[in-house]
Length: 385
Ligand SMILES: Cc1ncc(COP(=O)(O)O)c(C=O)c1O
Image (cartoon, rainbow, N blue to C red; front, side, top):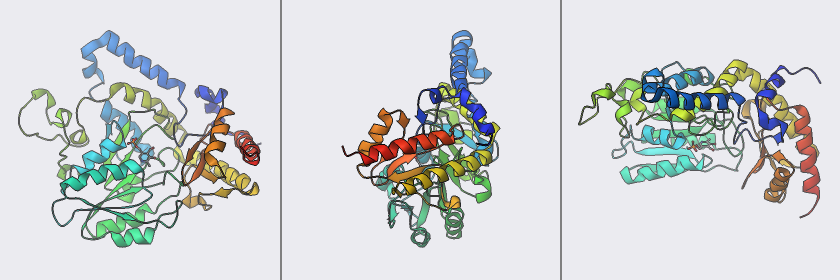
């Protein structure tokens, strides 16, 4: 096997010594440095107390967002940090009104469920939620989605990479159509960031959201919200708190005087420990560079798909490189049982109903791990329960 410089990073991820870790589409491995940063947070809390707010804690949302900016392909100062994607989506929704003729939220039926739950909740404010039916669980009906976006559309939530199939959707086409009729696109890049190169600003996405537990290896509690810099000053989020005030420490009463971006999209006190721990993963991903991660990911996902096809399994992931994100979904009979048995054998994967077993190599995985996982999968699938 040729020398793979990315394997240098294995040592930084302790879990790789204990199992075959192929689940970075769900929870990326923890970098050692995350523990160092958490300790730093604890030390600052312990030794600096309230003074820590002025020594980095208060601005931690902005500084953390700036670390993410090159990974997402956006300018510094355009990202605010939130508890999770759901909260970020709620803040975006609260910048819009749904009681007029432009009250539609249009998406495919393959979006992540919490995106649906959240926007469904805005029906009570007049929103109409339209789902474009997909032909199967792998690919959405892009033409149907483009047709459904019209002058009545306010928002189009769109996963850059679908969570169930790793299918890469044509974000450029959706954004172009949306803008031609005055609608805005909320790109959910959770399943892309850290494994598929992103140029969100060049795409002219109005908003982008995502979190850090997956390919960014950043752990929970570090969701991000990007707002197009020229759009941000026009928006007035209804879900807002004192950290979004132009002068929060004036403690002025009454209506808010919004800060500039990205702070105007913040709510209250930032989630300091989560943002400290998330930094480690961002730094490593940015240092390696997503194009190098992508090149390896395509090579290893191809190997997974070839081995799965050889074994006669159905692959629910696009074959074409340009349509495939970082995970491979393999549909085997009795998939839930097979996934459970793989995990019992220390091959860590997951299972999604209607799709199959999801497996995902990241920059720290080896070709041997792929071969081992597939040989275990074949053996388990061959044995009846
Ligand atoms: C594409 C996508 N969007 C959103 C989410 C959920 O985001 P959160 O839990 O941060 O609200 C997931 C999570 O698993 C996801 O895969």
